[in-house]
Image (cartoon, rainbow, N blue to C red; front, side, top):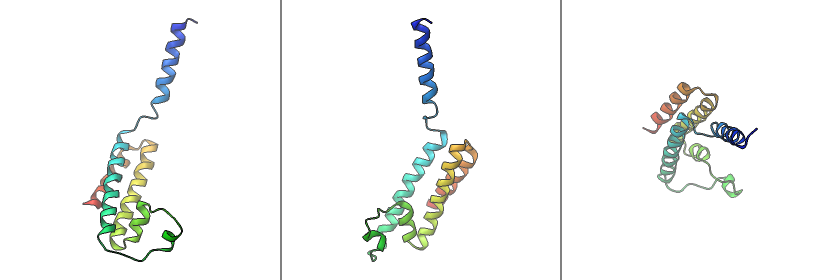
Length: 113
């Protein structure tokens, strides 16, 4: 086998290895919607004034978008629903179901409106 053939094979293997790492069409929409949702949750969390610290805060547990959404009561229910939609969108994206992924992203964005 010549060195040119070995080089072509090596390039082919490298190209095949990078294809799965490339973000799918839905991944960009998920990331964009997640960022918008995170901002909405933070904005909502700061708009209700001070609340007593929860036990988890005293145990050095870091807040997550989901824990903040749950702590916000009525508004948090909508945010939790949007976070669940994004989780389903990620699952659909991993399985290649672009239609389901797009539908879940649209649902999450509808909650933000």
